[in-house]
Image: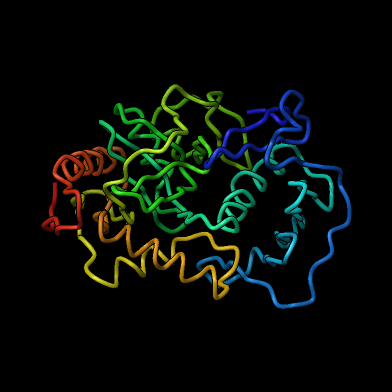
Length: 311
């Protein structure tokens, strides 16, 4: 997707990138002119890398959201106008990445949505959300599933709804792969656009934006090549804790946090949640995808435990 497009997003939202033309004024969020962005005086929420390093800070105020990507840019989202302000010029690729992959999920969470950091894939009207830490292989398994006939929503953000049954839709339809992931899947280097060392696939026929009934949430755990793909269901509060730790959150106010907890509780009551051990390499992806097919085929309407399984 280019910087001149208006991107369709979850919940009927749309995002007009910097050079967007047609539809710009009707978009929910619109990138405006570069201008200074002041950081609020009160303490921010912080996002940390696995090694503890803070890489992002954000502040949720009455009329704006401020997001500071340390050493990269500071961004303000103005609630009333939907204007998005970057405090410095960036490359098109960097601006698009920050806007769609990081700011958009926070905006959706600020609006009261429950957003998981995960990929969305579906078969026969049943969806799976793939969650996991950075580097767990969410994007690679998402794209591999697409090659095996699954429909792909996206690989980075999943918006959950506690309907009966629950449903899920991607924050927006996209897949980004590392060069190693693309090579493993046999995807040509020119199949997409470069985004910070990754390849963003250009709206392949596998992407869909619409909501799908949710049946399974899998926390991906990479294991050495040659090990078995394995499913281990989470029981009780562990399922709640795993999902809560995977959410994007704009704030943890007395109003917002209970809503998220209630929504996740309702979803855990209706959806099977567990850990999927994924062996490294192509064969490991194939085993994990086979296991997901089998689990999805027998997943109940409610969370009746699926027995620990291997393939």
